[in-house]
Length: 188
Ligand SMILES: [Fe+2]
Ligand SMILES: [Fe+2]
Image (tube, helix red, strand yellow):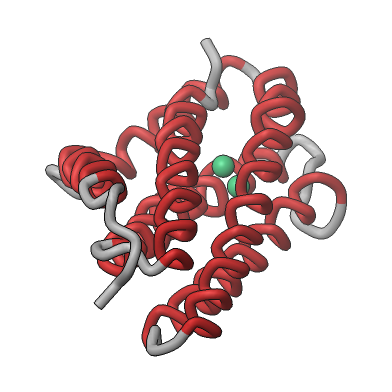
């Protein structure tokens, strides 16, 4: 069994949301109605699901387990992942600042640039974890530690009842918001 199966499933959800963010950013730059609201919700999704929940599990459960088998946080792949989590947080802040004052074309442009940097960073980050770090983790941690990590990830999820349903509902709403006014071109 892969110890990283909960985390891998979350990567798939995050990648779906990254595609929605790309659409929302394009529509926002085009001035499409509804795009600002969709972008706000997506930002909230990335702050809570991708960062607080998912990166929280990696930093609080997986990385400490990896430190016990020689992959510490001060160098190598774990240090790189930690620094990318930080970079992602900074880009989310930049997106939030641009969204807070969406009054002209320049701010919409600024949001689009920050959002695209975030999309690129997180897509590559997820590829690296899936293809390199998680594979190393699956090999380096013994079966008992694997089970402990996976159980801790599942328990982390259960600590907040109804959370998964909330994410799924939010993603559905965002998918609707990013497509509902596809034909419109100018935001009032
Ligand atoms: Fe990560
Ligand atoms: Fe991850």
